[in-house]
Image (cartoon, one colour):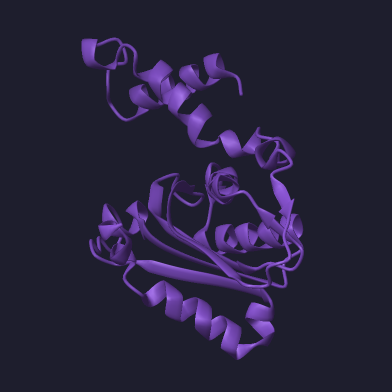
Length: 193
């Protein structure tokens, strides 16, 4: 990403909306915005193999593994406004499990780019399936979209929920139901531990 070019574009944008990019409060804004976009779109430049970093391990357990409430932040590709929420991932391992932190890193890999929530959900599910060769994968994302909240219909409390189910999560009602039931439980029970 050419930071200098992005700074120039931000400076031009400030002028077009009626601002003075030279005034004290805005003098470093183009640089800050360029650096912010470099970070917020880092998924385009990241290498998924480096992210996973061989953290896939042999396992003979054939049970459901769930990581819930993974925070995510992304940018809506229609307005380049943020959307944010949580991602819940479940999978039934066959012979391999992935390191827990790698699930969050995969979420960030796909979230840190211009996105729509529907595609983001599917991409995460497919990647978990590819990396683990799981029997099945389920991903649910619950997010608030600033393009709904601060412009357009201005609905402050709406939450969009999307899901993607693959393998046994799609084929078997019992597996999908177990996943959704476990997500519905209150995770606060671990606070006493």
